[in-house]
Image (cartoon, rainbow, N blue to C red):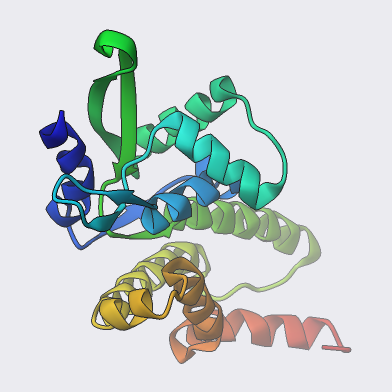
Length: 226
């Protein structure tokens, strides 16, 4: 039994340092509770290990996750709903079942413990961004034909170029932040929020501006107040 509990504590040291994951907005970004679970499984809970010392355990069961979420959001969440969100996170490749332990009277209860697949998860909706961006460009192209606007020659390639640029910076920022993992952890800085901030600041990078410069000039010629 002690060995079973120890594997829950050892889980954090046995997973990769970081992974990059592209997920759909519908299945991750639009559900705050899923982001809360991901963050909670990084923070973990303190537990006494078999050797008598106290360590942070970052593999948690549904009851523990539910309790922590209720404390954070000051509202209850049913186990059925929580299992639904956990299944989605497993499907997206963000978490996994670390272990199933026999607990309770005579070990009759099978309790699943969930954990992240990596200590740092850099989550992007890059595919969603590309699809959404392309849809916008397609609609404007229809409008341009109807109104006689002359679009740049590379117009139809811009969404794909934007997606590739976004993916490049997605990895650059992630790999840069990993160098400061101990500093970030030691000062309780939220890695994902820090990462999102850098992405937001980077939106004025010249690579993005150059992609849209010709189109911007077309709009300025046709919309006097710009």
